Length: 282
Image 1 (tube, one colour):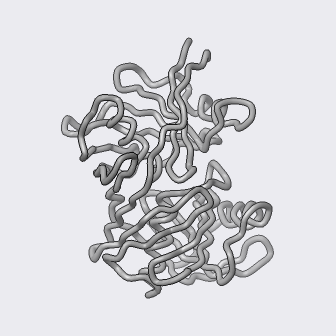
Image 2 (image 1 turned 30 degrees about the horizontal axis):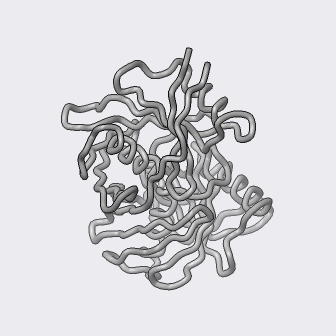
Image 3 (image 1 turned 30 degrees about the vertical axis):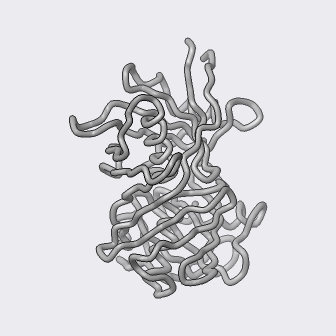
C-alpha cells in the first residue's frame, strides 16, 4: 500500500500529515505514528496528524493527532495551524478555516500573512478536574508544591484542551539531559493520572518569555503551541503579563505569539511551513 504524506512544522514542532478527507483513515494509525516518527530510521517527527472530514457540515476538516509514542493527543496548536496551511495550499482558498478536533472542540483559524496563521485556542482552565490532577486541591492550581526528581517544585497547572504543568525559572530553562530528567519526572507524577505536558519558563519582560518543553508522548520538542498558551496564561494570572497584549514566547524552534483576552480566551499566532512531500510503501 502506498501512502502519500506531507511533512510540516510550526516553529520546529514537526508532524507527518495524511490527507484522509476523501478516503478512510489508515489502519492502526497509532502503530503508524510510532513507525513513521522514528528519527533517523523513518520520516521522523513529533507525531502523526490525520486530516479527516469535518464532524459538522459547516466545518472544513477534523484534526486527529497521534504523538510519537502512538498515544492519541487531544490538541496541538502548531498542528492545527499547519492543517490550515495545508488546506489553503491544496485548494481551500479561505482566509478563515474551521477545524474540528477529536477532544478539544472546534477551532477557528485566520490567515494573517503568507504561511502564518492565528488560532483561537478557546479558554484555559485552572480547575483540577479539567486536567485532571489529584491531591493538589480543586484549584486554581497556581504555585502548588510538588516533589519530583528528588527536588521540591512550585508548579502551575492548567488545561488548554490538554493538560500543562508550567514551572517558572529564574535562570535559562533547562535543556538536554536536565530537561529530560525533570520533564519526565513531572510528566509521570502520580498527581497527573493521564500524564501532563511540562513547560519550563523564564519571564524576560512583560511581553516576552523563553521556554523549553517536555511533551507527553513525544519528549523534548522544539515548540508546543498549547504549551506556549499555557505559559502566557500562567504569567497573566500571576501578574507578570497583561491581558490583551501579545506576548512573544521564544522556544528552541522559533517564536510564537500568544494573547490572553479578558474572557480567558487565548489566541496563538505563528508560522506553518511545509518541509517536503513524499510517498511511502507500508
